[in-house]
Length: 204
Ligand SMILES: C[S@@+](CC[C@H](N)C(=O)[O-])C[C@H]1O[C@@H](n2cnc3c(N)ncnc32)[C@H](O)[C@@H]1O
Image 1 (cartoon, rainbow, N blue to C red):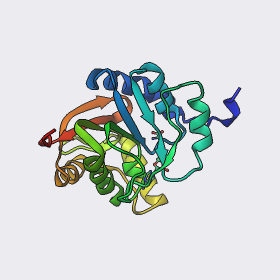
Image 2: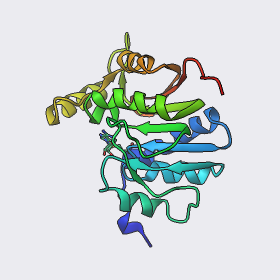
Image 3: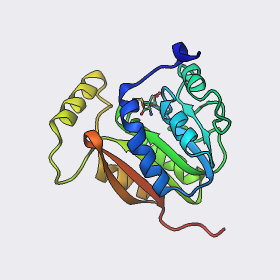
């Protein structure tokens, strides 16, 4: 019925189930989640349907994808209306949450988006909250897969400020905000899922 309003990313169709499997293992049964850079809305709708104990807040930089996000999440009572959220700003229009999920943004945005994501996660995560990022990363001592090297070159040709991020740099940016990388999960197609939480949970 809303199929024509749904934008579809083939990559999101392929990776949503493997990502969900990690989220279901790593997150508690109930909570509030914020998705950064929701894009088409495929991820959040899929996760919300499979994790009904969680409430899901979609967001993105602009409003272009609102219609698609809303169409994908139609009928899901645990998905809120999308909000406009630029990670580089310090006025995210959300309260505290138990999890923040962000897929495929760090390499398709200037580096300031990584610092902004980490600052925002430090501001908005509850004490035991987790930041989960997904995408391709440049890993120290691991040769870059040819497909990722080609992707990186293509991104940089489209915008010199874009490009695959070094895992070490992402971890350093997180540390500056008091967040620690707890787990790195290898995912299909040379992607990784990163799980961060607070280095020291503030007193309740
Ligand atoms: C490649 S899409 C990824 C969409 C979706 N997460 C996925 O994995 O299919 C990159 C997304 O990053 C968003 N984005 C870029 N810069 C951003 C910023 N500063 N704050 C929030 N989102 C941003 C874009 O609007 C776009 O939706």
